Image (tube, rainbow, N blue to C red; front, side, top):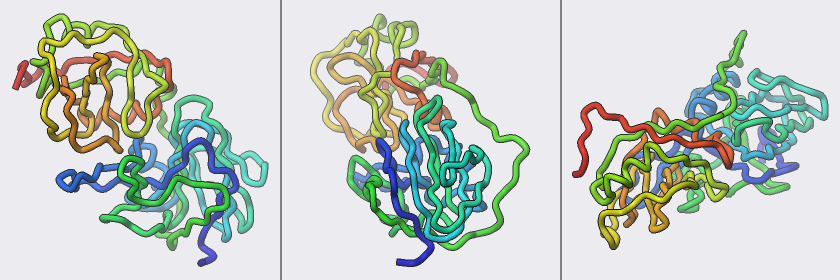
Length: 294
């Protein structure tokens, strides 16, 4: 194993290798995967001197701790968290020099759910279908981190970036999800459609990288039964038999048989990666150029 590597001291609740995913393989049944908070992933890479496509670590709630085998630069973004090097405080949202043999720790998120750790040179695990992203649904890509695992690093691409201020949206007080109606909104009554945009929903603890589950009033169906399996895009609002919308995220299945009442465009999805259980959710219908039904 090359000296350009790190070992896992503390894996955290769920820490995975992520990049920008493997789009374009849905016809093979392969989800997109990739960083749920893509802007935070890109920012971490810029601060570490990497191209935005370089692989980072995505932590979940509790962070992680890693021992580097060679001196390197690391940047932590996404959910704010305490950052330390051998127990000494280090900045969040800025390039951090980590000496060889030192332990870098990203602690529990102070708000939000997912932090991103970029290393100069990126994480150099073996690509699968052009991506190093871990996909929890299909099992493609590297396994989630475990204590003692060793992951290789690539060669640095360039000097780390500097920034006077790092943009951060702050805590997600309310998750706003604009959606395009359809293709199966005609499977719901007018009352069910009104419930979607007027009901009080919140983020359920049952969510994961596959989908964000909601709690709240069930949506009334106009049709019984289920659909034959059909394609499911990123951002689909699928409604299972309990009537509560599920927002499909990056590890979602590529097909499904429950009706999709709407689709949230990708540009609105990043806040869903940071919405903690209990966060209020409001669905906003995008009206321009839309009509009900198929």
